[in-house]
Each structure stands twice: as C-alpha cells, then as structure tokens.
Length: 95
Image 1 (cartoon, rainbow, N blue to C red):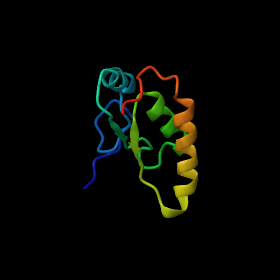
Image 2: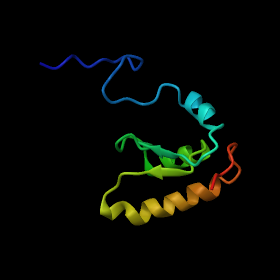
Image 3: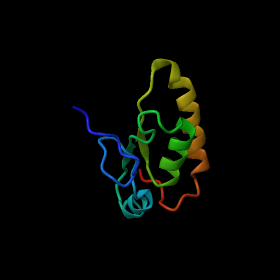
C-alpha cells in the first residue's frame, strides 16, 4: 500500500527540504517587490529561531508562519530579533 521509505535525500518525497536554498536566495535577491517566505519551519522540523533567522537573512521581507496560539508571543519575539539581526543582509528591505 505504501512505498518503502527511502534513505536517499535526493530522491523525491512528498515532504522534503529544499535541495538548493542558496539558488532560491540568489534568485530572490533581484526581486524588486516585497516577498513572503513560507514553510520556513518545514512543518516544525526546523526550530522557529533558525527558520526565521535564515528567511530574513536570505532576503525575505515577510514570513508566513504557522503556529499554535501558545506560540504567538515567543514567535513574535523571535521574529523581531531576526529582523533586527538581518539589518545588514545582502538584499535591501523593500517597502
């Protein structure tokens, strides 16, 4: 009924990490309008601090972040810190 799980990360799976995040970041560097990063936590596989830091440092202007109600306060605090730490990122903030 189910296919055998593969140990090979390079094979296609219905849920996987981006294989080339640097390629995506490079492409988005030239986008002149604000853009939203989504799935930055990979359904909880990546911690909020790491995912937010990476998204904003990589050039995202906004993130679409799924969370439970009890996570809101911590995630807002982490977002504000990630934005402040990303002030020297390569791609300028767009408004």
